[in-house]
Image (cartoon, rainbow, N blue to C red; front, side):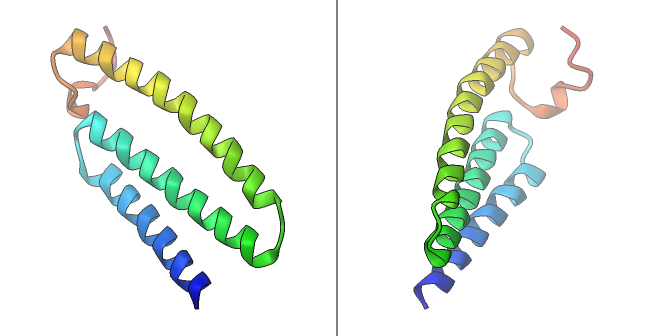
Length: 99
C-alpha cells in the first residue's frame, strides 16, 4: 500500500518535471524542472531499493545527487553568462548559441 503511494508520487513528480521542460520557455524554470525529474527518479530508485531489499538503488541515488549538484553549478553559470550576454533567459533567444 505504502510502496504504491511512493511509486505514484515518484511518477507524478517525474511527469510534472517532464511537462515543465516541454512547455516552459524560461531557462531557469526548465532547469528547475530537470531537477524535479531527477528527484522523481531518485524517489523511484529508493522505493525499488527498499522494496527489493537491495542497496544498489541507494548507491545510484548518491551518484545521481552528485551529478545533480555538479549540473546545478555548471547550469547556473551558463544561464548567468547567457543572461549577461543576451539580456534574457528565454530559450527562444538561444537559436544558434553564437556569441
